[in-house]
Length: 267
Image (cartoon, rainbow, N blue to C red; front, side, top):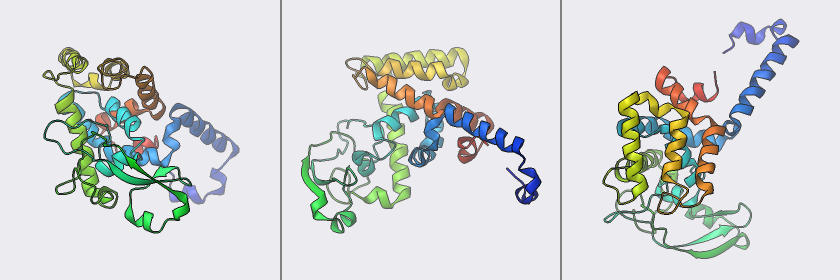
């Protein structure tokens, strides 16, 4: 951080200084190129601390959780995650409210599904293509009485506290309802046993090891009867984790108790 004197001193900005600054910035950008995107920063700033806290409590690698959330929700920009707060695309358990089928328009201009009544009302009808959206089967984290209904679809968009609560509940469900010994899915049980042994033998810090984060993603996805059966899914999640520097981000915040913005900007 530059001091006021440094900011106003012409002599401070020598060619050598500028060259060094450019090199450092370029190096940082090449390491974590996804950090240049504001929507990526915004999304991870909203879930990072909760992911670390929940990951430690339930012994699941925080960076892996964040990478999966980014992939599944499109960094919080997918219409289902925007409506429900379900950033991990978690299916509804028995008794959970799930998002019903919806009749929503697609904007040809913005190439997005529009769910906000205010935007739809002020939108050009020529730009909108209306279509019935199939029932998502994903848990709806909006509060009663809106969860599981087509009412107040824009609720979380305008209420940051409710959105944060929904995000946290979703992350907690993943850790406490999915990656558990009693899971009906074998790969989730295997992941739980493997993580328990890792933490027992190495301590909680092992959750911030790059190899452990990658291995966890490989265990739970990329094959039949897993979190996501597509072979490319683990590669995509690990690519996001690497290009955003999520292991380094969570490690620095956990070890140094640093502020998210400070760590993100590498200052």
